[in-house]
Length: 264
Image (cartoon, rainbow, N blue to C red; front, top):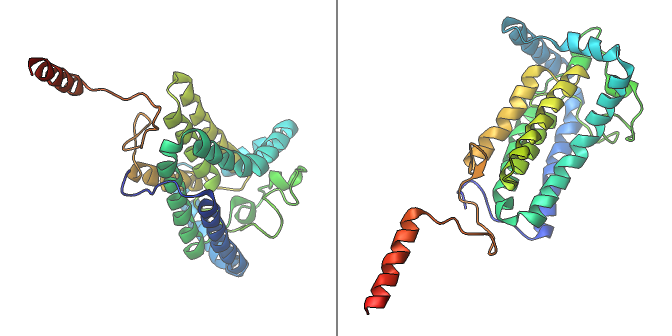
């Protein structure tokens, strides 16, 4: 097991750790509304950086979405539901069906989320829907299942734009799929974080830089926990029934041992 990850724990401990993480998020949520002026200053800095590098396309993307009603509805449901459904389902599936990889994948997700919480607590950032005049929050324009389009009302942090965990968790889900299967089709999973990036920017909930930040806070822990291109977990503990990977040197050693036993 990689030194930056820890083994799969009893499910009660796993659930408890999730609860602790959410409690920290809630504390940050409570203090965030009082930091709106600071978050708007940070938004101005982010917009300036994007303009300098030719990355500022948030208003154009949002305007396009507001002029296409069906796309607006689809994006609203995408933003308000998949983030809260897909990641827990993938995590539970890896726990159940790919237990040998669960420790590393879970550890990467926890580390990434912890990094994001630190940034939320120390560097609040107002999203485009707050900072850009003319930006329309299309998630709230269209009705969704939740009490609020951004999650259950009272349990959200409106100033947690950087990094985008919508993008970060989507990237983690794609990585989990890629390391769990061997079919070439598994790489289609990378379309999920790409689509999520488009949605979070077009709905005026994140800047493109937020999406880049979300990808970074997930990719680094994934690497530290053993993920290596083209999608292999180094040091993953294979299940008892998994076919062993036999190297030429192993075969050679085995043959020499057989010859020695015959000679004896």
